[in-house]
Image 1 (cartoon, rainbow, N blue to C red):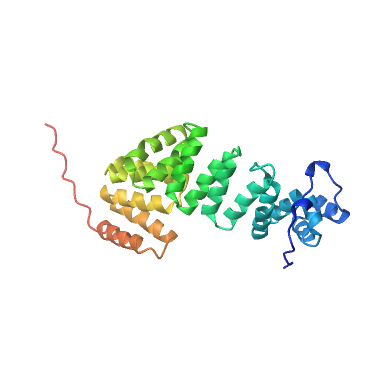
Image 2: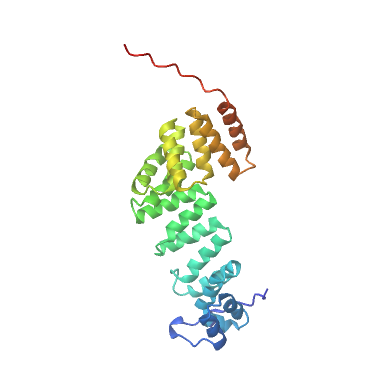
Length: 285
């Protein structure tokens, strides 16, 4: 691994608009789209060269997926480049958010994506909501989905994100109409169908809930939570064999989950019982 050399001093960041000539070695790497080689080259040159071509430097780090180094560089660049201008939308902000996400730091990524959204980046708030979901930070998801819906009222994913946040916070009565509105506009949102089904399960509206889970799983068959919820729903409807199959599929996705194992055991026990005979209908005279 190459050593991390000093970054930049403010005076070493030059205007990209002057289009300075790229050194021949770097130009050859760029033309070959050898992003890893270009990233390595930047680590060998003086800070002034990195400052002159900082856009290409961070692009090479992004393309070669050197997320830790990219994060360090972007966080060093931002205060220097914004010392006079103040906050502004720029590549280093977008790359910083992406690096945080790739490093699994989803809560931090959500905050940075939201900053980008406030600065005018179209995907800022959608990305912030996606990261908040990955972090399972429901209060943050609620706040960012609200901000997103101010900018794009009635947007189906925005409604779905807000509905999920409310559902996860046990504000089910508030969540249900938002989730219904989301799937009415865009029926291809599996997580919205799952959360709508969760709301309906809590109301014991088993038949409608089962239909919602069917739609969720048709779109994404490996949604563990939807499999679990449909298994619960089918059990309540006395569809024990189907319930058993759902719990079995869920347990295959998460074999060490004791709750799934216990639910599967119960469903298997009931599925093994003899099916009660239905008396024949009386004959018409």
